[in-house]
Image (tube, rainbow, N blue to C red; front, top):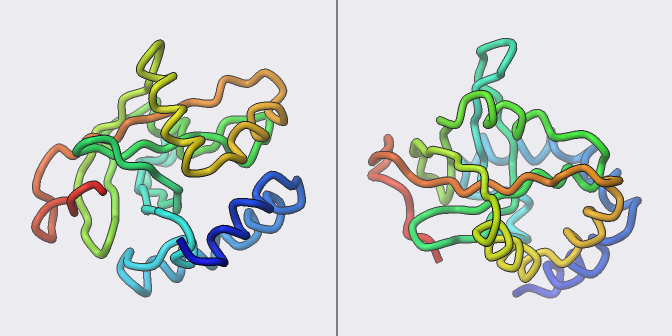
Length: 166
């Protein structure tokens, strides 16, 4: 891991960090589009771009997210930086679990399954190992259940299928 990635993990607990990074999301989306998904989160953390279908608009909505691999799938969390409301992309997945992921320059379809019970606990441990600040976000969320999704590829996609999960 890079020095900058290590520093990012350390400062991720601070409230100001979430506020600043939320302001940078539009820039991160633009960089992701320009690099065709090869650079997301400035390359500091394992990240993908998820494209959901807007639950009200029906339009595609793309968001960069940190992920952890889980077998042939990818795990993401609706932490919303510890805000007290669910992120729009997570609400979209609950309404329509079929989505698209861009990762490493490859785009492919996925199905999102909401993790519950012991599966949720197992995936939580994977996520916290990658981004310890998730523990802080749970406290900030004020009792809101933070959803964890397992994104399982459903087909080969437009660029030869998903890259192998690490």
